[in-house]
Amino acid sequence: MRKCRSSEFLQVGDVIRAKKDLKWDCGTRINEGTFGELKERDESNKDDLWLVRWWDDTSAKKYAYSRHIKKCKPSEFFRVGDRVQAKHDMTTTQGVRISKGTFGKLKERRASDRKWLVDWVSVGNIHTKKKNIEKCTESEYIAVGD
Image (cartoon, rainbow, N blue to C red; front, side, top):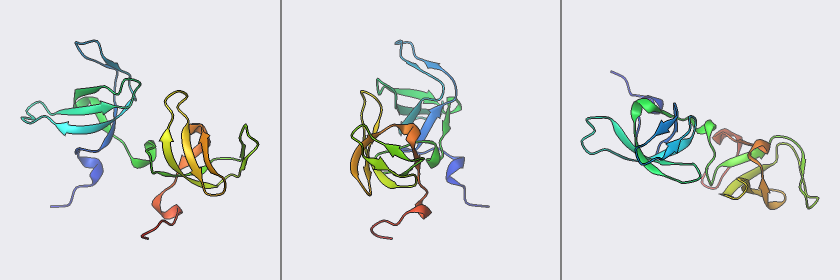
């Protein structure tokens, strides 16, 4: 007997992605690769169904079979509260310079242009494109309570 790794099972709260394009009778469509969060497991679970809140433009809540979804690693997605760092030197439209490697914390995601509001250590809150940041591992920063 051995203890299972968290990657070997699904549970409520896990972040997942669609393994293929999904379509429901009501017309809702989810594209392959779309992220979502497991909200609940079907009570009977005889069909291995999970209620997923999809992270698309509609935030649809739809049931999906476990064979149609894949659990994500923490490095595959961003969430509010994540610690990030700048991938390269950047200058904002206001002329603020952010150096490569500068740390920040994700505050919110703006739906209109999908930019993240990052609270950068050196310059404060600035909206930043996802392509300009990378998620930090817990060993890359020190936080209150460490």
